[in-house]
Image (cartoon, rainbow, N blue to C red; front, side):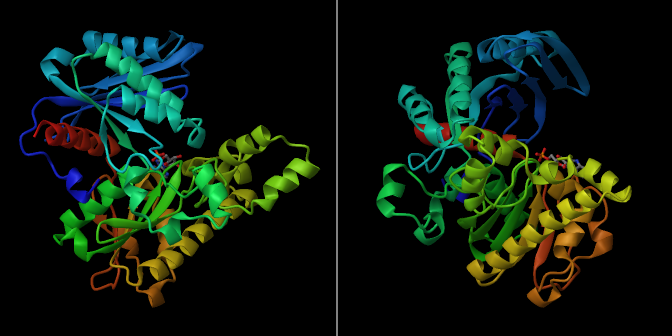
Length: 411
Ligand code: AMP
């Protein structure tokens, strides 16, 4: 994959259905890859239960339903019915391709792949590296191929952008034969978002991406940082799995692996218990009871000390990564905030950026104020490091990579 995949395809027509299939949910968006608009979007949650939740949005109206949904096949067939009942008409929308978000491409995929049986098998074979995600991604692909047998489908990998990490950054300091045998290295995640935002930054500042050293902070419920040199990723905070790195909504991020042995030996917790603890019960939620920043700020305002500590831990970790990535890059031109927290939470942004003037990092509190639904510079004029908020658009990026992959295959 290279940064040019994020440019608008010159002669694309029709729309792309983007599917993000999780273990118990399917998110979808119908995208115009040229204009960039979402023509419709939705989600099916709690698949496998009697009270699955369906939500379909189109033309300013939102349809919400609760009903039994047995599996991913039924979920996507219901989505097709929702399109037929509530629009837009998929035949009129001319679905030219289906793009699938796949979390783990391992060592196999360094860019998007036109889907055939071998690609699906390879995605399934990578499941040990992403047991929660890849089987669900593969299931979504299988169902979509049945529903759209004549439409080309493309897998876009969350890890692909980070295949360029130098060995020094990607290698864990464990015996190399063990690492090789079990495919243990730092793969990263959220790559589609980091790549999209870095390309957007270059477009917005009107400079070639090759000239820019960037730190991108994707701060959503999951969170990751990346160091990008001239459009090429050289460091990222997520590792073998999305558990490493920053403090997240429910994930601990970096932790001494000794904690795992300690809990196993002294608290009698099984590996699955600890997996659940660190992935789903930790992070902001583990420290404060809340994983959403809006609720966390309310707790802090009410005097909750645990919530205040959770925010301090979150900010401290982020600042530590910014300092580390300055050393990795040597020179930083841009810091870009994106995703739910990065785009909306001015308190987090201000706390991360304040007091770093000696590193060339400054924030203009007036510019920073409020939620940002469009790209916004939040550093003062003349600051050494340009700091921006850039809304991410992962579905659009997947749609564009999907079209570009199909066009490249046709040539
Ligand atoms: P994402 O995973 O990118 O959808 O981000 C979800 C997270 O963004 C939520 O858990 C919140 O912590 C955060 N978030 C969303 N909206 C706001 C807001 N208006 N203010 C502060 N944080 C927000």
